[in-house]
Image 1 (cartoon, helix red, strand yellow):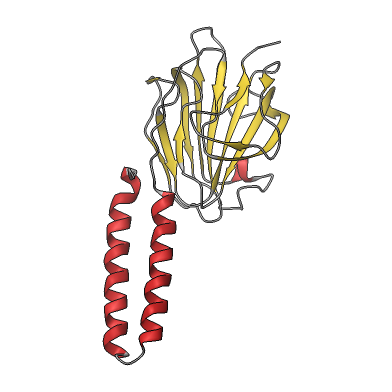
Image 2 (cartoon, helix red, strand yellow):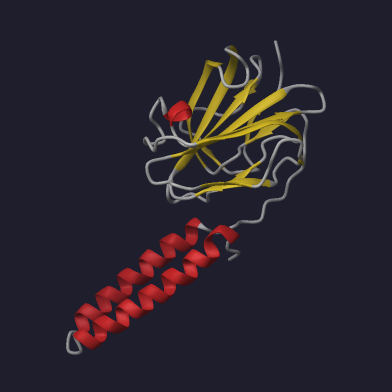
Length: 222
């Protein structure tokens, strides 16, 4: 299993802490074999849960200028037309939101290829990721990508109640490739995608997505 770079140090420190804690317990309660077994099993389960969160599955991408790929593993929780004010000055866009639970892989991948026309990090609150105001009030990043055909796609990483650290690997002016990593969010979060009105949605509320593999829309503009 390949482990993402964001989790390597944390996993090593956690492993050492769990080993030391179990050794201390064995020394403090040398005759309680039942407690030793229960604690070791609980520690192993906890470590494996954290380990799977940082797994980095291999993704093979066949790029397309028309198809929008899911930027995150998770579940589709929002599909609606909205007014977007940060970059599009109140113009209507088609929003697709994906909620990432603590059990999902939290690598974020570029939904399209193009050049980054706009990037901004916003400090903010830590409302639960499915809260209606989390998209505008929580800690977040906003990325706008311009495709070769001139269409623009916005992607927004949003921290949730547990996710207190957003990582990003892109900046304005970068050329990005569909499916490659652009960021990571730790422990429960959400990613919004804003598309031109007229784009054809290929998922439904409740559908599960895989970053860089699930097609969520075809790009069109009215």
